[in-house]
Length: 239
Image 1 (cartoon, rainbow, N blue to C red):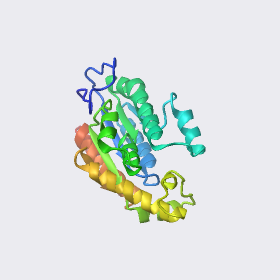
Image 2 (image 1 turned 60 degrees about the horizontal axis):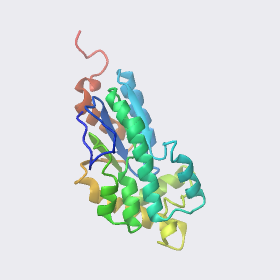
Image 3 (image 1 turned 30 degrees about the vertical axis):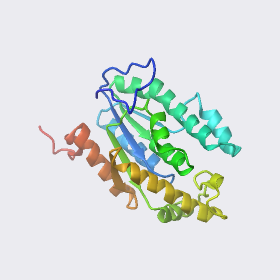
Image 4 (image 1 turned 60 degrees about the vertical axis):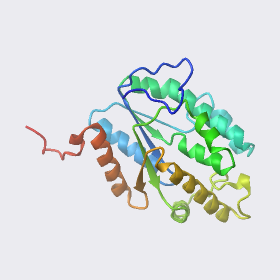
């Protein structure tokens, strides 16, 4: 994979020619991203691929600060955007590029599209947000696990989960109660991600179906990119 950035890249970070593959799974909390990332990793490793996984708030540089700010409900919109951009920049430089240089398939459980959507919903300028992430590598594929907010609420409540303060947009006063706020906020986030789908080349996947059906679509797409024989049933290959 040739190194390509959305903007000027990272200062003093020479990517060179990258032989690996950067694959992103985007979607709301509760849509199944983590499950599908784990399943894809096991499947690819079972076929001999070296796989590395990453995701939001996994940088040692920023993890503690982001967690503490969220727990204290003390994020303002610009600080939030800059914190998450720093998190990704650190991971691009110290995790993603080294893994790609070594030929790994890097599976990213979200990248920056969701954090851009969060910033836009909170009133930050979309052009400013796009420039902020100019250091980011362009993935080879972005799979958008798409689910409407009502189904997202049903899934969250079915599994006994609680509606999260930040994932409900409570900091921006969309509604008086948590339920209505969650629905309104997730609707706005979905609209932002839909707006990004074409310019950022998303492959939309209907996440309302079973895990098996969604995983089959993801594997079919990745086989087309990495190796068509990944879908060959055992015993059907060449002798």
